[in-house]
Image (cartoon, rainbow, N blue to C red; front, side):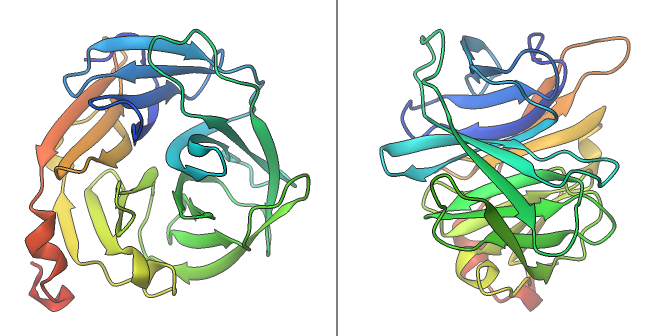
Length: 256
């Protein structure tokens, strides 16, 4: 259970702090919560920003080493001219506040969209819309300083209701989740707009109140976050083991 994170939204496995998973609420004062794989709270780190609709968190490389990317990308009315990405050096669980974040303004190359999923591969940032199709957008490289990021449409995943996505620590694979399944893609395919998954993991049997977050660590442990139920405000963290190594070398047609 995650009593401090009733609106658990995004998940990201730390690359700086072994055994740490980062999460956040999608409303309230912007705070990063560090938990262990059992959901035990390890620390709270305040982020000195004001957000509109913070939907996801991702870990990735940055000029300073390892950073957390905070995705203020929610837009249920599809009316925001710009969405915002914040980037901070990954803190330690014992820190009280992050460094002042870099702020990136971004917009889609077609029209505004509601999205809850973002991930980072190398210097590229990806956003997946939450709708009936799951449109994939990629930042035009590199991420600029002080200029607007253009998110270019590169593919349609044919996934309805995408709530989170994350690159794996080695960045060779990406996991995308809906309320029903966690879907794995090879990054090399994804970045070329080829969207045939190599593994689909059904998760509808987890009985989540409102499934939201997803992340995978270097050992193939799959983490799922859910918001709490109306009678229990605690969020929930579920852990599953996935045999990703064998699945990656099977052809997509072999997956059942």
